[in-house]
Image (cartoon, rainbow, N blue to C red):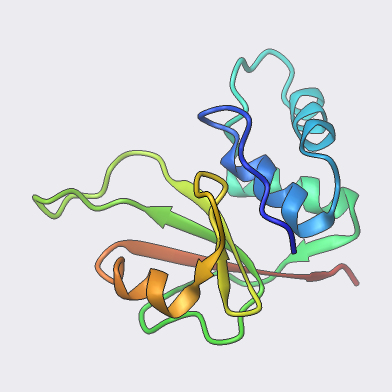
Length: 134
């Protein structure tokens, strides 16, 4: 897998779809905009990402709350940031986990998933496994 940098502040989800499918990020963002005409943001909901993945023959599996690491997971990670006061911020950031690495579209390079998780274990992390559609 190749890390792709997100082109806009809110395009982490479509960028992760591009990483998982090998499609150009501009193509994925264009598909998202066609799916949701009138929205002026590249931000996406999980349902939007599932639809985009389906166009490329991929499907989301059942989501799970990550409490003890990622193991050998391959999929999207929903990262809900926690404030120092213990509250979760509104919104979330999308990443990819694959081959024991985290691909964060805001980061300069992939990092080992165990290292990434250890620094963020108190945040809310939801894994959406991705596999070939049936």
